[in-house]
Amino acid sequence: MLFSSRQELKHAIDTYNIKDARGMRYLKNENGRVRAICKDASCKWFIYPKRLNGEVGLQIRKWHLDHICIPVYDNKLLTSTWLGKYYVKKFRNAPNYKLIDFRKEVTLKLGQHVSR
Image 1 (cartoon, one colour):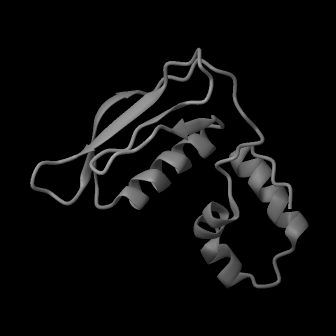
Image 2 (tube, rainbow, N blue to C red):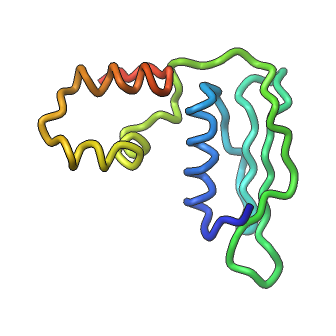
């Protein structure tokens, strides 16, 4: 899979882990690569994309996508920015959408807790 920018790649990794109810963190990233690992030290999940030579995009080179850790339902990846991008159409189509209904939908669809 090829990603055009680092932001697009990070958004895809975050979305994958939010929907899978898993915690992860980014390692110190260099100019040409982005590295992500599971927050649980005993879990072997990782993804290592790298910039292609002479290309603009990034491609996933190494990965191990099987989590052996327990799910995280209070995920730090679930930010207001991510929720805004994911639910932008719903908010535009229903401007009177209530916060309590939104929290219930996130809990049902994603299995995640939204504090405020």
